[in-house]
Length: 221
Length: 221
DNA sequence: TTAGAAAATGAGTGATTACTCACTTCGAAA
DNA sequence: TTTCGAAGTGAGTAATCACTCATTTTCTAA
Image 1 (cartoon, chains in turn cyan, brown, purple, yellow):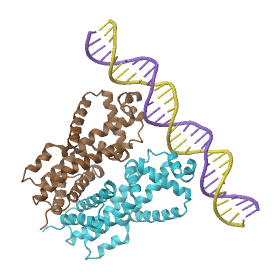
Image 2 (cartoon, rainbow over the protein chains, first blue to last red):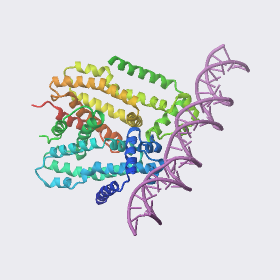
Image 3 (tube, rainbow over the protein chains, first blue to last red):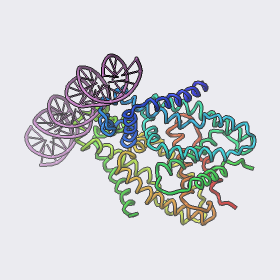
């Protein structure tokens, strides 16, 4: 099961790269236009004729490349979901547990930094993902499966490891994870989606947020 | 300006109550059906004919009471937005600053408890609110205005107060607010929207989450 | 240069959309 | 009982929807 999803990720990355190369210029423009309009008005409120118009393409061309409008959506949403959770499937992540003197906060900071940049580079795609997943049962099922069966499992092992080392407070791992994810997502959502115009020093904000988090999650005496 | 929004809230609460009373039975059924389907499939993907069908009403009846489909949406979304921020406009909130020995964490816990219950009682309405605000410029503007000009201002005064009292860490108030809101929203979203089926002891979860937060936000020596 | 395949086109299709309106039903006051 | 405005109806409308397909254009390899 774990290997299945690892395989899913590898295949998806490979296939995505292949698709990127084999794309016609018009096909690329269709995808770009679709991403723009989907993120502006939402999938359901977007018409294929509008996509064609913005892409500078005949409406029929869209359906040469994508069987249906939903097919177009899945082509867009699929890869971004894979990239979103990709860090948790990296070799580095599993290796982390073997280095006994590694500090949790360094790991938290690295994740926060990485995902902050990632979110900034993929604002539109993430907006589409967030908005459409709740209304698409199969997407929803896939997200829940990947998250609960894989991301969560890996995080639990990681937290347990650092609890045993005395770096993290005792208690249910999922509570520690909830506080951590709340902090990082809160940071990213605030400065990427809510007030992106407000100028910040990334490193300073990350340090402050993770510092507060770690003071809360440090092992109690 | 502050008084304008205070007035807006009072008017909205009063008008909403009046509307509730003056509603026909069929009108109520239309609203209930609309809330259900909007939250299930999203506003744009919902047809007025489907609403009429589920409400057991002729399609024309919908347009007797609501000029347009968007009008129906605003009737639903308006009141829930007011109720969402209502705690921040209560007299108790401003009075809090006058009681010198009050502890911040008591306040945080009260807010968390209150909004957790509120979210559970309004899952569908909140789902609609969250999904439609980003695509409705006037709603978006209103939310941003109410939040930044009022909720934020009051929170800043509150945090400043407790910083001066030595209960909270020094530094920009908005960083303290960001960590706090991240914690509370993270708690609510997790247990109301993501895994509502997972059984928890509310008081225990709130205490744990706020305890972690306060260890992070406590004044440093 | 040419042949054949792939890409692109856009007019056309039936289905569905939000909304209208002439009409009927209902309920309460006179 | 009568009257009258509000509530409710549902067939009808023009616009728009996702999608098709016969045809043309473009690209590639021999």
